[in-house]
Image: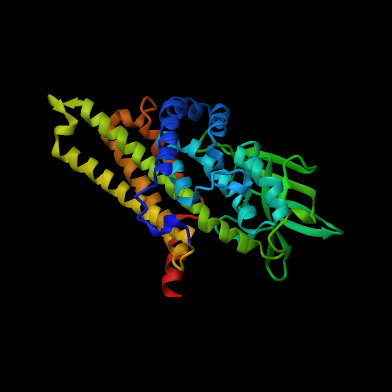
Length: 384
């Protein structure tokens, strides 16, 4: 059991506080000033990525033996929260670095871990997680991408959709049907430079606009047996095991968006005057801001508790992970919408960042398992 799981999650060790403060400083001083421009242009922040690499931020999801910081799940999600306070898309850079490598970290062979993870920890490699398809979002059973064995290799055919890092990924973790009759899927590592790998359209999105999302296509892509992740036919186990952990990143991103929007709303209420006095002097405004802060703080506590349970491997870890994702995402949507209301007309235009926070927040209710799917997971765990 991790030492972290035995202490109150808000009593952070000094080294974690130092890491948090480093990420907070980077987010405030370097990420925030770039966020609006990157969003407006739907442009990936390569300079931001380089900055995160130089400061070992991409090492947070990984163990020391693979070049990472070895600081665990809670520290990773604290960092995601801090980045999201400034920009949801930048937080997504770190989230996808975990999501696209968790299948390898949790289920991969030692050979594939040693081959792939160090470059991911340094930020050199960019992973992508390829589960969803045009006709299979929440239901992986509807997957039509296939992989058939040909000697010592596998040949993959199909199309994925809604894939973060599409077009910039150095490799994809691709889930494909390997036994249609028994509804069995398998996970594969597919390097993006293999013959037959291409990218179709990139999506034009409401939010998270500087993170590319698109449709990777696999046309007779040949990969060796060494690129199988986990066991053949056990891909659904790999996917669910990954999402149980990675959905905490979406929860942390949601908390960061909620806190960032609250901070902007508080600052604006202090400086904006109406009827001859500051907005912050009106009790209705005070209560609105109080509710925003309280909801965000409550969501954060649930997130931190879930992180500690995942690290400790407690029996209720999956339930807490889903509860954190559900509550944090719904909180982000509610709080960012209120932030826009605080700003009034200014909240509806791009001069201020709260409209971007609201657009970004909506996605946290959809990806990494929709809020409806989280309710299914929670209720099944409760009812057996």
